[in-house]
Image 1 (tube, rainbow, N blue to C red):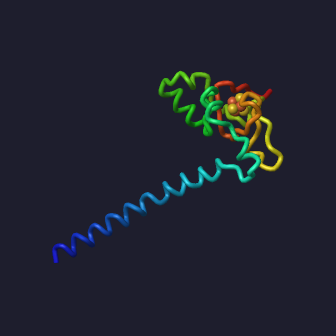
Image 2 (cartoon, rainbow, N blue to C red):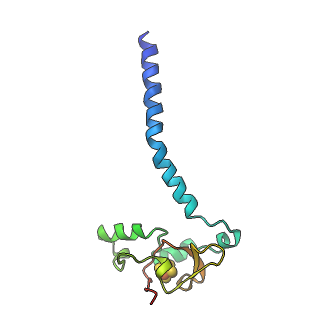
Image 3 (cartoon, rainbow, N blue to C red):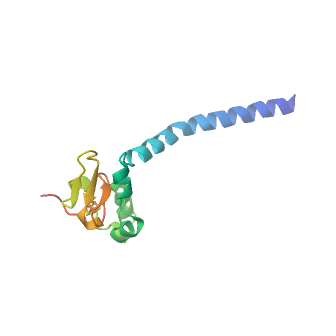
Length: 123
Ligand code: SF4
């Protein structure tokens, strides 16, 4: 009897644990989908790791903000509100305007909410 009760308790513990994680996983999944282009042509010409590393590019400018707040020198140039979509080097794609070619990234695609150390405000 005791064993059965423990098994039931373990089941509910796991079930509630999984339920508690569900919204977190949904958000992470939604972000991953939002940050991936639909177009195969864009996927093929996305910023590569080497360029991203050189520019200290992040697909979500909030990461740069957090990095700056934590004293990471890579993000010291970050200023509030700066994102790829309002950078002068961003040229939005006609089909998927949330993605755009970036001159500083060798005309590869970056995400509208991204940021890098070469950011220049679009005037
Ligand atoms: S130069 Fe501008 S558009 Fe290009 S990755 Fe950096 S912030 Fe984004």
